[in-house]
Length: 476
Image (spheres, rainbow, N blue to C red):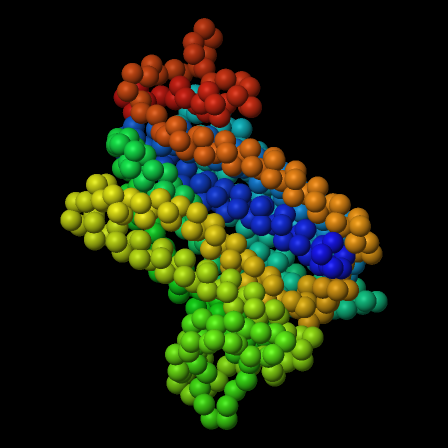
């Protein structure tokens, strides 16, 4: 298939499935916390707008959660089918970490999810809020374990190699490996930003189409406050993450910067744009800013960063790819910061909900958080190559002994099935967004019970008919 080896097809297949999967947990993490905030604000203020928004986003959360579970199961199977040598080598570390995620996070989410979706009229607002909090905490615990496992693959420690296999000797060192804190914060904040811009774009679309109500204004306001406060914080976290990567994976940083060689006594420039050529060992058409590379990565005006030619050709990541995926991520991050600042200026002048230019910008920025996550994930994972466990196991040695034919057929099937199944899922989410939040005006409160209106007992029909649509209003 296009001259690719089985290894290339296995990598493409995993990249394809993880690219779909990572979108769902990112929105799930952000929406779970957003729902907890909305319900908490409703309990505190009894303002109906928060409850209306809770009902609206709960439907979208339910659909997204289901798609995330399904896509995650497929990925877990690929460790055994396509990467069996990796599982044999490192399974004693990654296996327990993923099991901890199931035993803590997934069980916590599953245990309270039903109460969260259908229980407001049955258990009361206080206990229901507790269930929402538990689901939100569960998503963060899940992030903790997944990032611990993945970070160990980038900066492995706390293990011994016995008979060609990794044996954990210090679980605290395995979990809290050098890159883990930075990657955990970076991913969690990225999920919140992706959700904020998704929520903001939803509100902007309705406002642009003349659908103006307090719920839509509240959606846009909360989303832009999150962008204003958290986007600059993400830039700071990213800077610390970059310094950590420079220390433990210098070849990745050299590839990201498209930096090939140092000149004696000269600092490293920052290459804004260019085309890293892996064959010619140079970055063509480079546009540079002198000294800035050393200033950003070394916080120095004179100290150079490592260059790609300091590493053997077989140990270099693909600079052509990660050079651009990193710049896409950073560029989107700068646009997020600019959008947050613009919203503050409009808020002060009273035009946040009326400026059509800003609303169009907010709408266009809707997928920016998810695109930035994908670009960042490609940067960190392709930048780890040619290692699957950095310094211990090469990617070529981790793949299963499949042929090109088998991998081509399975990859084609994944593309067809994923585009069909998750395409329908994405379409349904957009359908729910198009409907918009429903206000409580004219709705008769329903508390359930014998002979009284109650929440539908059919889970698959709930997103369409409404999850706890008959919840008590602020007036009841």
